[in-house]
Image 1 (cartoon, one colour):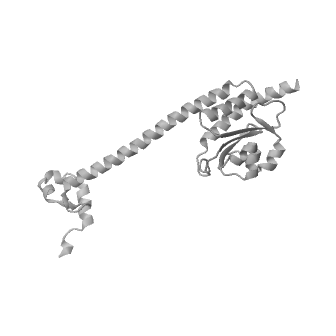
Image 2: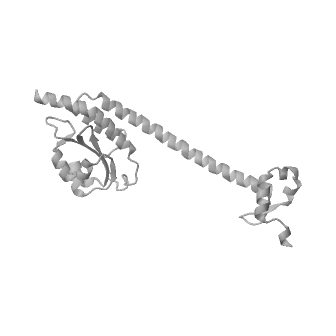
Image 3: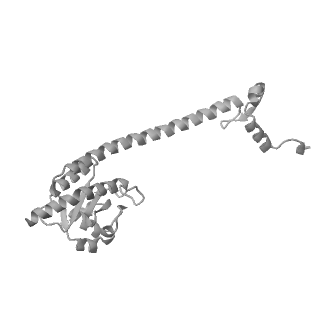
Length: 229
């Protein structure tokens, strides 16, 4: 006899297709009950209200997360704006290096900043000039690649990038500065081993590297001209 009755799936399908059924039969709502996790039973209407309340809470939490991300992006945009403007205002390689370090440390709270330039003669401010050949021997993957990397480096690589401070750096992010040719490396380090991770997004430091490359290239040309004059 049970075959004469519709299955549960058929009932569910039918109710989905006839969502006004309980509007036409409101008396059934008072008779229908569903088990409650806390024990006992509640009416279908009460259960629906509870489900809607739970969904509303989930939506509010999701909206709050979106608002938090939006606020974080606003803060990051203002920091990036200040950094980029400071770099654009630099009139020399030394001024660029000083502005880069100051902005990264003051605005972004970077603990260690290393700005290496390849084969640049004369004073370069807080930037350090190293031979491209030496860099290719000490950190070949960083020089050869065009993409920013983050995570942990070997002790000798940290020493090459940060000098005596390398022993204090437990994680870092490095971006090659490239514009038609290798110009240098920017490395940002942290004493926290988990601050920079291989899985992290490197969009920020990659953007800084792109801006640096565009600003640095003409400044290097002007610097070379002054040194040869």
